Amino acid sequence: MPHVIIVDDRVSNREILARLARSLEPDVRVTAFASPEDALEADGQLDPDLIVTDYKMPTMNGAEFIRACRTRPWCREVPIMVVTAYEDRAFRYDALEAGATDFLLSPIDHREFLTRARNLITMRTQQRIIAGRAATLKQALDEAIRQHEETIRASERKLRQVIDTAPCLIFMTRRDGTVSLANQAAAKAFGRQVDDLIGQPLTEAVGDETFAERHLAEDRKVFYSGARSVIAEEQLHAPGGAIVWLQTMKLPLQTAPTAPVEVLTVATNITERKSFETDLLSAKDQAEIANRSKSEFLANMSHELRTPLNAIIGFSDTMRNGIFGSIGPKYLEYASDISHSAHHLLKIIEDILQLSAIEAGKLTLEEADIDVVDLVSQSIRIAEHGAARRGATIDHRTPACPLLIHADAAKVKQILVNILTNALIYAGEGASVSVGYGFEAGSLSVVISDTGVGMSSQEMDVALTRFGRIGNPQRQSHAGTGLGLPLSREFMTMHGGTLTLESAPGAGTTVTIAFPPHRTRTEPSLAAAEAKTASRS
Image (cartoon, rainbow, N blue to C red; front, side, top):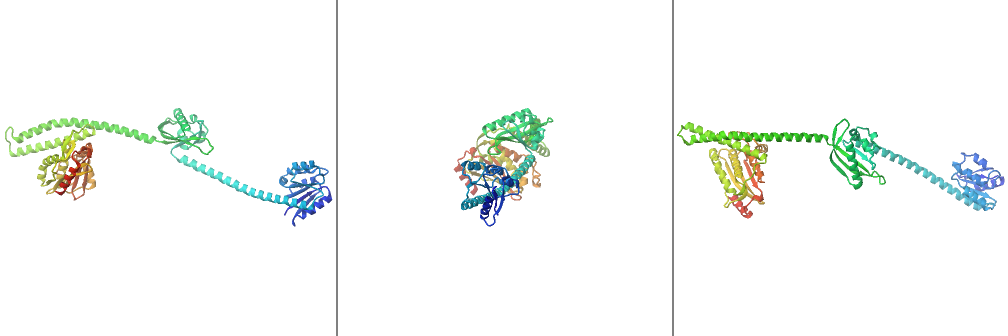
């Protein structure tokens, strides 16, 4: 309920004002004082909604009383109405300047007093409501601020955990070159504690002066251009003499819209990778030295082996041909075996030398326009002896016109002989080998298929590996080295073409060699027509 205080030195005035105040509302509480001092002495026990005071009083006038009231916390916002019989405007101004809310002359108009008093009490009530709401809002705001600050602290702790967990070196610098942030990895690399780095110039935080100056120069680039900067690889001379290899990125960072731009540096430790690269380069150098030694050894050994092999071949052929007289049948058979074995060994040496020359990049192509069909026919004649011996037949689907390519005739012929020889070996007794041609998108291909035992995918990988031989009983009788297909594929690669295998156990094997379009010299339409003719035959 509203509380009204009356201060007046005259009893009659106090009674009139008290009676009027009680008529404001049914439950109004009125407290009257005969002097301002009595009212002020009740400090802390009063909580008024309106103070009504006389101006002219013996010991303290109304203005002085109002000023004293306004110094009390309980009275700073309370409306004060001054009632006096004097009409001097100076009293009114003095009271208003002291903090009076309203001024009323006596004799009092009861209706005017009630109206003004009710308005002042209503105003005080609204003040209380507003103050209560303000207090509630302030409390809520304080709680929100507290929670926000706690959220920020939690985020900072989480961020600190993240950057400290990161294996990268992370630090941030201001325009003046001082460190504003650093993680544990950076502190460890610099030989410092995190707290010791913050606020320190980078030149003092890092013991490596060259490293610090380089980073400050990169920071200036970032500040100037506003773009990120990358240091591909750099060295940090860490405390203790260790060298740390880093891959570094810098980018501008602004923590708030009004905050100054700083440079964030993230450096990945690539020391282990650099060590691996060094070991790898060392191993590569050693391998190249070993490879050169191997090539030199093969070249020297091949020369040393060729000389006696040529002599063996010459003498055995002389004996076989009876140039110096006839020999017995048994010795003739031995001489023939010696010649065949020597030729076979010479072929192996030549294959190895060719592979060595390819590795060294010394093998070149002697290119010319050649007829693939004619080369296939020649290769078949070379392999016919083996076909007859194994009871296998070769079906050559010969086109009616030449199929020309620009290539090395000797190497293409060697490719064909190697593939045909393998096909005859894989085909087995009574099997057949077919040779056909294809033409697609300008690429000319030769397709050689057999009806032999075939190979699995793993066996095909072995067959295309140098010195790889398939462990099949039907193939053990062939004294091969496993260089035929790998060498043929190398030759096709030199021509820009491909050698592919298609096979399955029990379904035979198909080998396709395809030459690129730029090597084809046959008109595409003619080649396509001939390919269709061949397929119909």
